[in-house]
Image (cartoon, rainbow, N blue to C red; front, side):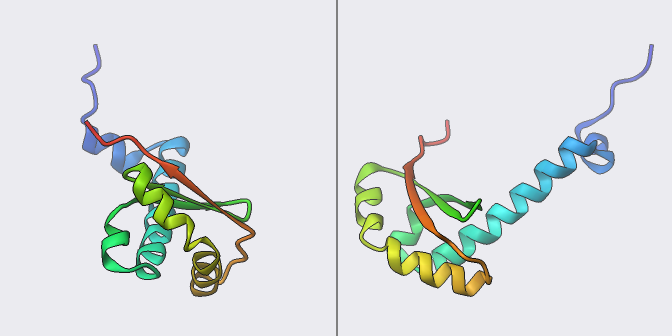
Length: 101
């Protein structure tokens, strides 16, 4: 019987799907940094995730009240994040994400 691989071994070697997931996670982290840099400090603390896919910037926030506040800044975010990242953002979507358990 073959000894099971440790998590570290799996991450180091990784498969195609794992490498793609790692790249996507890194890309989303960069987008989140750009979004947070474009917002006031209090509001940026509420941003839990961000990503750009097919010209749409999707931002996940900690609660409905933060989502409402962020919706007032969507046009400025679209322009500023698009400019700072060098991509065209056509729309912005704000989502409330559940807290991590």
